[in-house]
Length: 400
Ligand code: MN
Image (tube, helix red, strand yellow):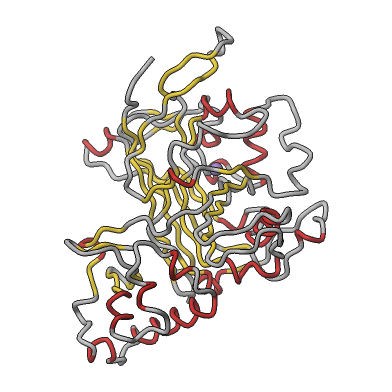
């Protein structure tokens, strides 16, 4: 979704450094879908049209953008319907219906288990049998660039053994990838894992901002609540599942074997490179570039998208157009591949040293975190970029 200067929200597709205005292209009768779906304030109307329309539209846009095709020019759409990306406002792509965040990285779940419950079994007994998740807050899913106000809340003071109220002192990020549901499902009817591609439109980058001190005090017994619900940032571009076909790979083996409803055929791991950049206010003031603090890949993740979808609906819960399902923090096997500060600094005990001479255990006001993702671009495979999702930490509105 984008907004040209002085114009209305509309659907666009990224082509190099430009955005092609699909509302204008559809109005000229060049797309195989109702033009109203592209002149809407979110992608939801287009998402509801289903896989056949998604695929036909993507194929047709590819055709229109092929060298030698003159249809856009003949319709008077070049250059008018092509906007430089930096001249438009990129907006929240989807009106998020429900938001669920999984916990699907074995390495992340193991690390967090060690940090939150030292001395115990890091993985709880259910973890290898079902994709664990919590319901997040759809209304606070925000587009890239939205400032993140440091949350206040209750934190347990280790010395006093009692809660106190104030700004979080352990503000963190979670590097995640989410999928957006296009076509919903009927209440009472589970979605089989085999039908996943009929429902999953595409993927976004997700930053599940997390206040670790608030989370640690509140999460037992019902899971994360205010430690997560203050903001979740997503990237402006939704990469269609169709565009990711060349990067799909066999999922990692699961031991023990999962129950039949969680078995999914096909290659559902995704070779998606991810990184986290941190830019402090001090680095920005000195003209220093952002520092890459983690590099990882989505293919490490244990539970796949069809398994997540099958599990989320196996009780008969229905899907809605615009539902967002996030992967959970993506962490790889080595320390430099962890997707959160609590892992990268091991609970804050090993702060990161930054190029401006400062240290970070958790985020400080003025820090900007940017997540980036891309597939391919190596050895002959095309490059499919996810763009970036970024947010700067603002001071808490009140203290004490
Ligand atoms: Mn998360």
